[in-house]
Image 1 (cartoon, rainbow, N blue to C red):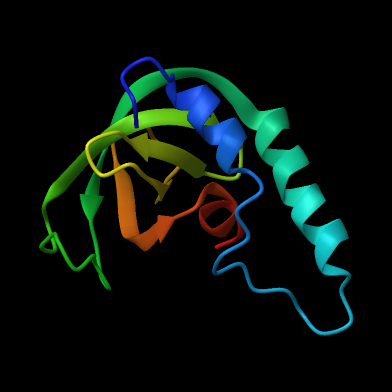
Image 2: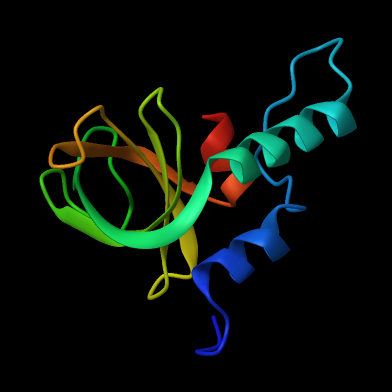
Length: 117
């Protein structure tokens, strides 16, 4: 990500990336993607740093128990934390009710994919 693009600008430009998003049979894909993007926008906020512990199944470049750090760009009351990691230029989904005890369970990629997990 170029240094002059904020995590929120990056998020907005990548909301059209549908890679990896599973759409159930009988569901209109365009409507589903639009609903995911709208839900992310509804839960967006100014980025702040969060940490999570890598949990099974993990990530190819991290070990179980490692800590991941990134900028939370959207958070739902259901415990979803959409996190952008500039060094990897990727989004992660962290889970948990308590910001001080979040888990990262192997979901990373585009923001729609993460939010739909």
